[in-house]
Image (cartoon, rainbow, N blue to C red; front, side):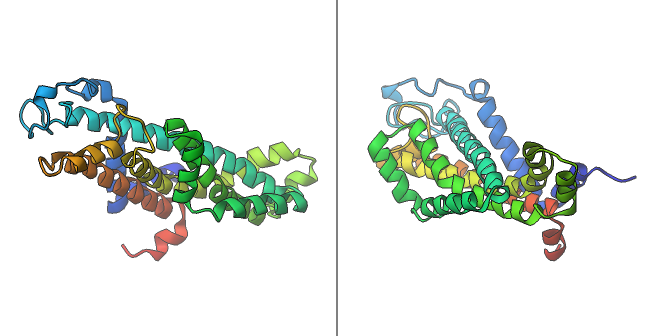
Amino acid sequence: MRWPANTRALRALIRDPMGLMGLILVTLFILMAVAAPILVPYDPLALEVRAKLQSPSLVHWLGTDQLGRDTLSRIIYGARTALTIALTAIGLAGSIGILLGLIAGYGPRWLDAALVLIFDALNSLPMMMFALAIITVLGPGTGTLILVVVLVSIPGYARLIRAQTLSLRSADFIVAEQAIGASTPRILLMHLLPNVFGPLCIVLSMDIPVVIMLEAGLSYLNLGVKPPTPSWGNILYDGYTAIRTSSTLVIAAGAPLVLATLGFTFLGEGLRDALDPRFATARPR
């Protein structure tokens, strides 16, 4: 019996210890974010100043912050904040990148040259400096952070799709579609898009932890998610300001950042090996 391609890829991912670990961590991360209202023991915004900076206990498993808010509840909701920003920004950037990459790779040469020039111009800007410039103009906030990630990520995704499209536009099945009079939108959506989407999925999964770290870094600097919205970055900053009194906040905010980064990175590596046979055969088992 021949397994479908997607089933074979899933089995290959599960057989890979690194990919399986990444899949488990990412699944737990997503479940924590989705089920946050059910999992949290307390309101993450509720203040109890008399209980500030308490050590971990049976009442507050990860202690409390400098305003008496339950740290575990804020960490769980911080996962929702990080995932919402990362998926929204990466989803928008990936969608726009696919569209521009297909147009650049399949369109006329003058349009390809103009789009590549724009991609190169945006790609030459350092991510953090560009982010600080946009935030200075528009002000900090979730929307600004998503806009920064989208603008920074589009050129890389578009160039990837463009390269894949250029390599496929002269393939026999594309030439056959052109010969029977298939429209350009049909060729792009029905034939080119399914063949270029796989490599982009791998890149997207490996870019999610980059966005999570960027959000945490900017929130740590009070340039990202505005308090009192829970974010791992501002929880980390609160822990830094109170580190002489308690180190629990720093550890509680740092651990999920590390685990989420490792999870998405391992999952991306596993997907690359599962979807691209060249890597699967080259990598020692």
